[in-house]
Structures are given as C-alpha cells and as structure tokens.
Image (cartoon, rainbow, N blue to C red; front, side, top):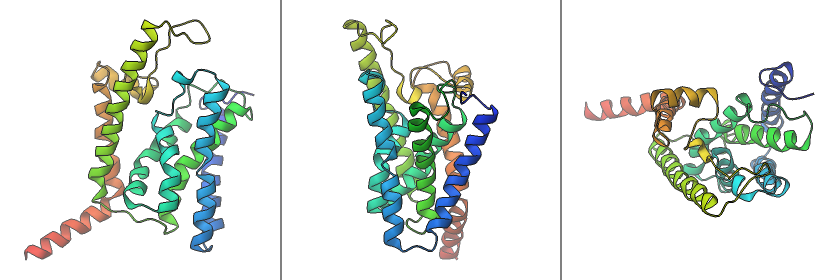
Length: 247
C-alpha cells in the first residue's frame, strides 16, 4: 500500500501525527523538567538519523545534503532542546512549519510503501520536527519572545540565500564534471526550492514571480503573517505597554 497524496492512508497518517504529538504532551505534562528534556532530547535526534539514512541509502550525497529547511530544523533541534536557547527555540517555531508542509504536501514521496524504511525515515522524523518545537513551549521549557521575530526572519533569509548560492555552485560543478544521478541525468539540486518550485503552493508563487530565488520571497509574506498570528498576544501587550509608558 502506497502512502498516496490525500489518500485514505495519507489522511490517517496526518491524524496519527497529531495523535503522536498530543500523546507526548500528555505523557510529559506532569513529568519533571529533567525527564521532559531527556525524552524530547533523545527524540530530537530522529532527524539526524534520517539525514544519515538518506546519505547512505541513496548513494548520491550531492542530492541528499542536509540543506532543506527540515534538515536544518533537524540539525538545530537537539541544540534547541538541550540548551533551551531562546533564539533557537523561537526560530524553530517557524522552521517546524517546513515539517508540516513536508507531511501535508508529500508529493515527492507519495508513491513510497507505507512502513517501508523510506516511509519510516521520512514520516516519523518530520512528525517530531513539527511536534518537539511546539512541545518545548507547551511544556514550559521555552518561552516566546516577540523580539525574536527579527532574528527568526533574518536567520531564515540568510540561510536561504546561502543555500541558493550552494545550489548554483553544485549545479555548475555537476555540469562541468558530468556528475550524473542513478538515471544517468546530470545532477541538479534544488535545496529549499530556490531554483524552481516543487509543489502546488510554490507553483503559485512562481506563477506570480517567475524567477529563481526571488519567487520564494512571497513566502516571506506568509512567514510574517504566520509569525504575526503566533505572537499576536505578545505584540498587543507590547503595544499596550508602550502606550502606557507614553501616558
């Protein structure tokens, strides 16, 4: 049985993802801080495991470098959990959305068999990359700080820009050295989708701004809207405090 795209299996897997995250919350809700950090910290390495799996199994390291948003999330997550760093945890509130999109818009892996190793190393790490950043706040291990919006957006745009340059370099290197994939085609990477869109939502962005790199800046507008909703109460409180201070 293949996973499918909004098939019965896909929909059930999305419901299961919510169930897994909710179960972790209720299981850890009354636990000590040490246990919470230990459990979430151990689970946070699932994404690292997926990165290693992809590098080894697919035998094409240039195509499976940890340079997508979910991979960046996976590498930062253990540090965010164990250090409880405010900037990192607030950053992952945004980056975890990449895991959500990977689970919902799963067109690149919709043909894989459910419970195959490919499915396991894709599905469960993404569920945890989505859930753990949220649980850090729900379980009182991290605190939202509206001031982190600037660092969150800045770090994200900076990472995207650097990765776009890496895309250009790898693609140029592959052409010059005739580096091919398993099908004999010259490798062309598209980390963080900076070169071209790869799902229906990004296709919409590209139809509005049909230029590599720049078209993804439409996502920045979505990011700002998302962060505005996440920090809405904090923003309102900040505005009220400033007004009271001027009275």
